[in-house]
Length: 305
Image (cartoon, rainbow, N blue to C red):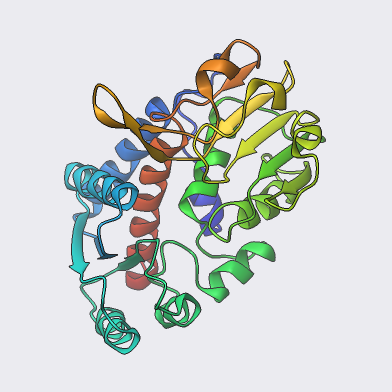
């Protein structure tokens, strides 16, 4: 079985449970249960090391979730906080040490990175067999060519949401707003595959797209991954659309100091669309689970288990 297939085999009850609010919590719960059962059965302890540079709030939030969830299911998650002034060579040396440490099964370089660092060189340095974020060109190439390899956690989470809710993609027009290497590009390739969560007609929009709303209103399924809080408004979606919000943005809040919102204005879009994911509690919840599932897969690959 290909690794991609392993990543997407959490089907829950198999029933069509889609409601208007597409929560990710039950899906993530099923994934965690499967990982924990696998770990306990084989009596193993996969290990993930996260390199966190600086103090970006969204990055810290994601890392804390990984630590908390990992401890509950038997995956050791160690975060190494590095000074924002770390130079390129020092970071490459730290990665090389982790590459050669047999006790470390997975390496994750939390983004965003400081502007003085060369991201492409750093990504190339991470051992592709420990690259659970799937940013290494070898893993990216395998994804595009439908070969064995890791799938980035967020695109994998989107596919899992589609599978769990039995959302048809075959022949559907899917519009992705965002062309990042992390989400937009890999997700577009995955949705084009000849698979149960593929065979879609995919349009990728971005900051230079003219008349963006014209394109988003054509979508049967709209996926927002642009990194701008509350960017998608009700006049940018059709009343039959399914909206999947990938964004996680921290904004100021009068009562709580801050809160997390997506790229979609959930409150104004909810009444109009046929279904929509919340933030928090949607794709981000599943993303954490899929990343930890990649850690388990990495352990199995390295130990032929």
